Length: 378
Image 1 (tube, rainbow, N blue to C red):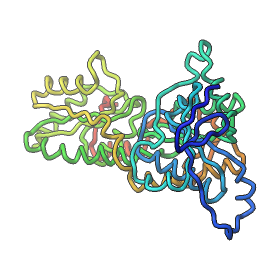
Image 2: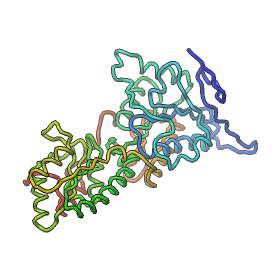
Image 3: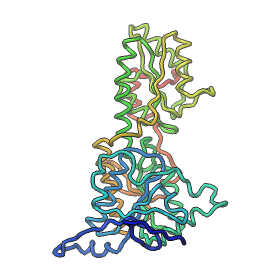
Image 4: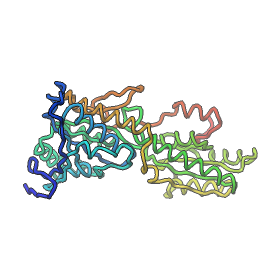
């Protein structure tokens, strides 16, 4: 195994680990759980797309582990990729490195979309992760990520690794939790953008077609569309008819409302090779003869500081993840259910998506208010 040395780092279990020396008063009295868990070493990684709140979750896991249980905490860089290969870069996280990150977007550990079990029959990535996990002397690996990350975490559990999952994604489509951190921030960003588009659409008497993120699930489109006063909301879970969309826009024009706002999720299905936002924009303009413009919010929904709600949710989930580690309740994903922080087996989550249902209360209320979801009558 290749071992390298860098000034300011210390050698640990054959790897380079950035040192974070903790200072404790000789007069400190520790709880028995602190003494028992102080021998435990946990690793934290963030995987998949970034989103606001990851740093708050890292902080929640790390500070609970350090302050309440006296564990050693290692931050693994660049997702699962950071546990593959010979030269891995692992940072020991101390109080100083976890300070000042609560309000930061992105992730201090970096991330990647590495899927170690993809083509695992042709490479040994899962075995490399297992080997490095054991060489580092980890008692548990905390995996912060979305659906793909939780699926990978479950497979690592089946290989014998101790893993805890922490769900995150702006898409809010992780099964088993009421909400994921990142979602609230993304909805706030998208809603503000829609608010701003109202004034320009009204001034020019235009139709504005706004694309938000959501490949399979329409949570952002639904929540931001409703909060932003959209007239038409199109989501992947509800098949839409473009003729119905055009009828709604023309009806609004006849009733003296010369502009309309259409919010759609990027993953809606259209009978065209065009991007959905391009298809809807051109179809509306051609059928209604009303000037139509498109606005793609894109990655702006992922960036920036997390909302207070996301900071608190990530902190609560991260703290509970560490509690599960201390209890040695491995193979679980922390979650929010009915307003309470809980957990469920990773095997129950793996391979599932949480999608918007047609009877969701926001959709029901939207229909009552005349908001169209593009459905055919009857």
